[in-house]
Amino acid sequence: MIGHEVTLEWPGHRRRTVMVPSQETVLEAASRAGVRLPYDCRSGTCITCVGRLLSLEREADSGEDEDGTTDSDEPLDAALAFDYRSPPEALTDQERADGYVLLCIATPRADCRVRVGPMVRAEVGDSPWS
Image 1 (cartoon, one colour):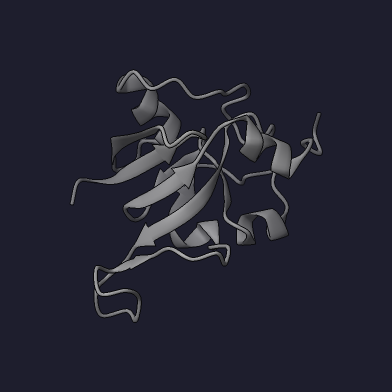
Image 2 (tube, rainbow, N blue to C red):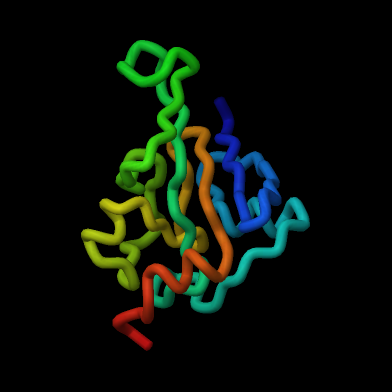
């Protein structure tokens, strides 16, 4: 596969799926597709672009649902779905383990769903660098 599908979900059931080519960030792909996401630093030192991993498509033989997805109330570690161009300085280890991801520097490793919007930003709080 040349890239991965990332479905962005806002409050109110609004969804938009973007194809994110290899080596491109979610923010770059969304912008190219005309999807507006908030951002500021573009280097992982603020949390303006934060999202939260909701589900992840995995190999069908990995023990997940029959369709290869996970979708539960338990938080998913963002490292399961994303690599970073540079360290996500604005997130704590616990926030990353709870599924939070900085979309300005995140490159997907799998098809996934990510919640976005001001409520996600409010869940994380302030960046340690602000």
